[in-house]
Image (cartoon, rainbow, N blue to C red; front, side):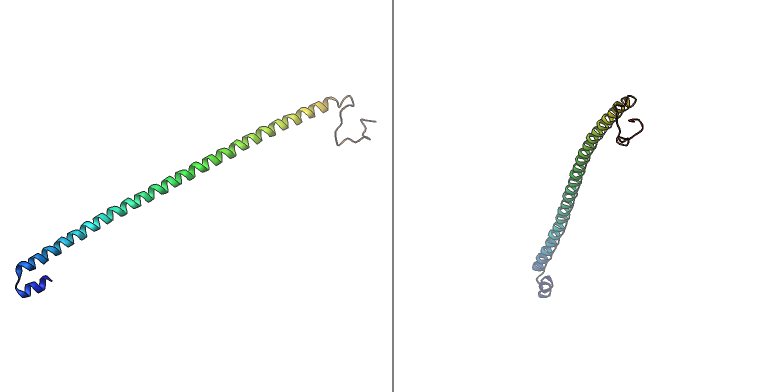
Length: 115
């Protein structure tokens, strides 16, 4: 448009169109900067969300591990109690062995001790 005004000899109108062009270029630069800032904010928000999600997943895994650990400790205590009870019973059975009162599954009725 300014080129047409220049050929027509209307320099004031040409200057107006040139100023409009510069103003529009400024608006374009402002839009680019604003868009860049908006993308930066969006990226930071996405990264914060990813970090929060990772932290929540880590917490969930920690709680799950603690739950499994407590269950393993409970089972270990039960196994220890069972082992002590079996040892106590074994020692009780071995006390009666000398008197002929104790019996083991591998000694049948016809064993030499019973005869």
